[in-house]
Image (cartoon, rainbow, N blue to C red; front, side):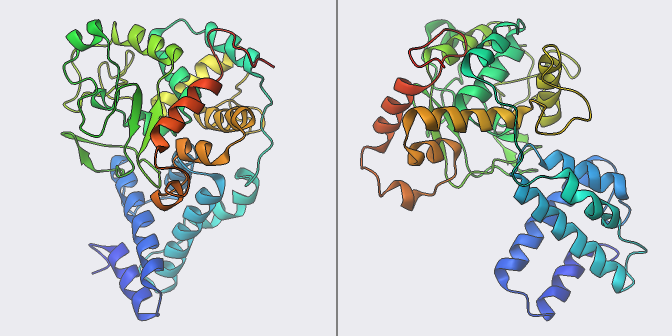
Length: 343
């Protein structure tokens, strides 16, 4: 069995060792996701080496909190350690990775302190419509890089005559609402969604409607005016205008866009750590910090980040959607034009 499905072999043994169903589910979710990642590199869990493991850990950093990345690494190490111990694998490629992990993943990194006016200057120097739309969407919504890549035209409630005439599917998902971006909580890596297999996961505890303010509407309209016509069947919101023309953006493409733009003003250096580099995940940190300071309501910010479940939201108000929209639009910082709360 191990030769065809080493993950199944491992999980069966863990069952015999008395591991709980919850623990087994967590192991299986991470290990199957890891196997899918390896498949894209032409490898399997049995043939993967240290560099494959490192690539996977690196790939997860923008989608997950650092503590979660460390947990994923621990699962891989446990899997490989056991399979090596029972003689199914020759060695554990995670050994060296785990030795470096405490240094490479800081659970609470001190990040670059950037003010709203400084961030605005950064955004204004971005001239390409796709790059600016990607960066402003990350800044205005706090979505993870995988969640940004998974956005379809049908998720964007952008009621605009010109946009609607050009894109019949804009805002067409039943769950979508006018004036918001809808982030589905159910998409996982490898899932076939809206006619297209996804390469990234949405890591939310619930689906979320994030309001569209005037600035985000404007940059999205500008992007949609030049968006390539030949695109995948899922009608992605963001597609490449470089290598892979017209294909849905991947997390690596988004990281490259942000790195190129941040490097141009000294906010990114290859090999530097999270304390210095501005990455897609930095924008989620920026969103959380600055919006929470302005609103003073952690519940609304947690909802927008996708960190709270339905039962938590129910404790606030029956008119939750309107409350979120009003509070958000009253407080969201301007990254193109100055606002009343500039620092």
